[in-house]
Image 1: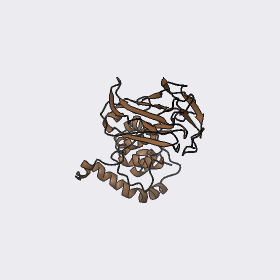
Image 2 (image 1 turned 90 degrees about the vertical axis):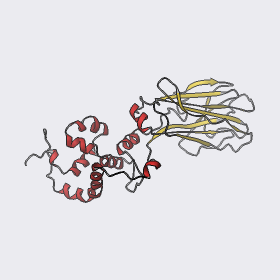
Image 3 (image 1 turned 180 degrees about the vertical axis):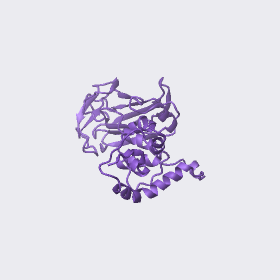
Image 4 (image 1 turned 60 degrees about the vertical axis):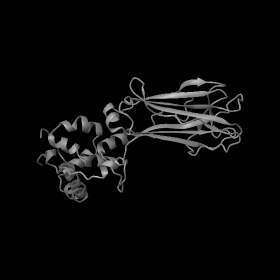
Length: 302
């Protein structure tokens, strides 16, 4: 059987092969092999197919995405950047900023005069006392895989969430502050709503706080998260707000800029080529694949 150069494969088959290659190897190694590989790896079609294969989108997804490569990398990095958000490891990973009254404590749900959390997977919470209790975490974005150019140019959404609840038999005050800061810790954007006061004899339901940082200034390198509070009765023990399931998640933007969408730009050659791939992919794949020799033997150089 004659050896077959991998570059003799139909381009749509080569693209399919690339969907199985780890993304970082595609960008750091494969893209440097030759101009054909570079051009194929730069096609947005490849990154859309990889997003589909890894479950980041579904077949019927119609969300507008401006850059599928960035979308793919952001989805692959997507996770909660806060450590120990549900108190499963005690106070580990949290910096204690203020420890008033009888100090911070970890309790199991639902707790005295409390309610179960909406997510049954959450088993514990942090609870405050009669003196102000605050704890915090600092997230180093570069250490978490978010490179500087990404944060300065793409500026993906940074979604912050927290959950708090009061005991039914005691009032309390809940505080939260989240800041996006530069490398030298200058605040570039902040979320600090007024403290929430819950009166005594409340329903003790869990409440979600959510904020999305969008279109923030370039230069963001860290996220500072702080929350806590105290009870309003000044009772000894742990009668202040309960907090758990906090999160900081960086997510890709899927909606186009409204201003840009009012004017239809001229279609580039790359866009035309990608549209052709989208329309021809499914019909050509089976035919080309069935016509290949088996097993395949690839060799270099090209």
